[in-house]
Image (cartoon, rainbow, N blue to C red; front, side):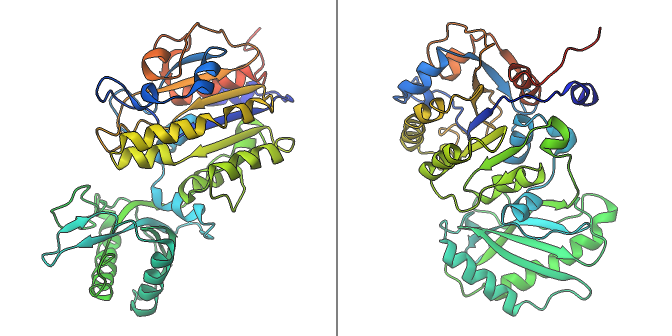
Length: 399
């Protein structure tokens, strides 16, 4: 289907805005999801003028990470195109990766005197603290012969590790145990070819542990998303779309760069993202507008904060509609129900307003309402083709 779709791409003057409310899907808490509990008149009114449905990010029952969730939304089969979070983190801070580099995302964490994790995010330390600790490691780690080690701050408790100089293998088990009260896992090789890389990582982790032993919060590291850098087919190459990403978090800038979008730097708030959309609207065909805090509030298990974030986003909907994009899509990369305090497998609601949309009578933008929509249920990466058709960017197939 990728070759078929690519053969049908045609130029058009249409503009597409995709607003991704990260993790916005939920499950009922006292009878309502966060979307159902939120006062969101503009999103609900938009749903009444749009087609609606539900998207399954990966496959029924599969819980997606942020990378695969976004790949699916952008029309890339997340099973085929998945890549570890390390590369996305590197690209997110514009680190100059080279072919063959091995990248991993670091979570600074807190461990007790027994080496057991007590806080997987080290109290969400500040950006300044993260930079200080990265400098401390860079200044004191001895390294590995023949290997360059790069440690860079990303945001809050997140940092980046990049190895360069030898053949590496990304088939390494992550060291984050995903829970507290247990020690970090070892970076075990998942295949025989990964053993040299695994042994190298163990030496690096051991050194970092010694360097950080006097830190009160960020006194250990957890490594996630091991990935070797490789090139992906970009948005213009694949769809003929000149695309811009408006996101504040490095992870999502990384996804965007990997897929050939132009990333606008310096955005730190929703207000800045939506103002940038207005300022750049004449320059691009496709806009990816990312909202992070619907996800992070869900991960924190904070139902009311997630509701408030939905309401905050709702206030910007008229500003988007005033630009009159030909296609306006609102959805999510995955669900992060606050009662679960983590990503989940639940499908996410989607709405699409376009001149060709079959307005389906749905009255609100939430999980229960969109389940009755005319889009029905489909995999996220299949929806992108449907969106392109609504933007007049696909020719007829066959005679």
